[in-house]
Length: 194
Image (cartoon, rainbow, N blue to C red):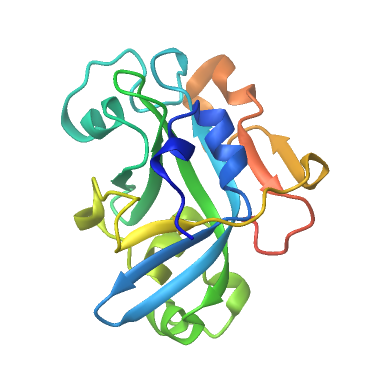
């Protein structure tokens, strides 16, 4: 069963923790791919120096974050990687959750061909890798995650003891926000990014 809009309309930290163990699904003309979400990072908007929407205003690529939760915020970094975020919270509260890693569960052969590797552990172990494996592109910016193309399937919530919190990755520019424990992983999952 697909996650409802209500799930996404909580704060970014709650959504980031709640997404762990859920299944990201993408339907494409080539086929369907699915991966269990094993790593996320929360970006808490106007007060978070690591967030793209820090200090506003709503314009350009961050404009989707100022609407209701449950839409895809997709962007391109370093001139080579696509990253997928889930918009969280409500209108005018620009929070988002980066999907950092997946455990492949369906369409694995298609993922291998897209990533040009036979190593399952390398298919989705990073935000750029998972977008390539799942064929998520900037054309998916703004996709309704309650729709039928790119969405998240529900799964039972994980026990709190299975969720680890640590500092986010590659945000050295963010001053004190570098230390916030807003990266969440499934304990001992081998598909978490390195």
